[in-house]
Image (cartoon, rainbow, N blue to C red; front, side, top):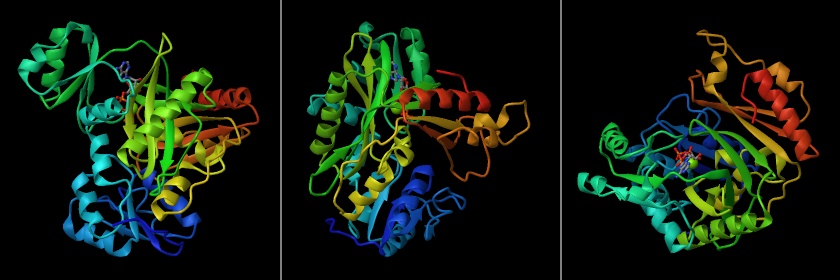
Length: 387
Ligand code: ATP
Ligand code: MG
């Protein structure tokens, strides 16, 4: 179904009840929409704050019918929502992004093929689905990273491999599912670009942000990017715009890039939804990535967002709850809240686990230097390594 302007007062639905869904719900509610979340977990972060929580599996026909019945339009908050579920919903209601667009982002091989169609360079790679393909791998791709084609996130489903023996062992460890082997690239730094594209084809973007990963998980995002050149910034924004337009994409899309030591820009992957690296937009921009997700879903006009403050975002993983040995203890929030320009976001998850995204903290300031200095102090209070 095509998207027409949905006025506030109606209900916007979202597949998935994680933190991204929760922040979408908050943004929708601020604009006067009611909200509905489909998630199997009774205590999902978004389900806890939405008007309707449909507690069902993502492919449950009754649950999907219920979500479709109460929602004027439906979006998604995670890329591994079965594309079939989005297609089922699309028979009842406008769905953005489409199941077809999400399906491209779900599969690293399809994603890289799409980058190729858009003339966007990515890491040299090969698809591995059979033992023969594994054995025929070009030596130039090693050392490399073997990644499952589907269902990877936060560095899960990937193994760094130095040589053929390690590659064969890694593929066995990944249960011989379809994988891509990517050449290990010499990264200078990493950036991402978030674009929002409406059903009418109009698109806007945030400034590019610089991301630091630790153990495959985003740890720190800084904006403006301290290292990027105007040329790389322009290229990345043009690439992301082309990637969205060529997909006929409607919604918020994030494209992650590597900047190599020789200055080249290479696309890594994309996410068909708001992204962890864009959480700073809640506090540092006049519209957040979630506000723009609401606008694209409601068929509302898109206005270009403006960064009004330099910002540094720190991810708060469950590890912070286990600093002093075994016992789970709440981090010292009072110490970080005493610092200027600190915005604490916790996602309402009942229990902390190492590696689990519990919340994030954004520091805004008049200058990038001051934001960074305060963020370093916050990190020290919390026991996070400096950058
Ligand atoms: P997420 O979904 O959380 O972004 P992911 O599990 O999908 O992560 P990737 O983005 O593919 O994983 O990789 C995670 C990190 O590993 C990258 O941000 C980068 O730091 C490193 N990495 C991935 N691929 C390469 C590569 N080809 N060369 C060098 N480093 C890489
Ligand atoms: Mg990634």
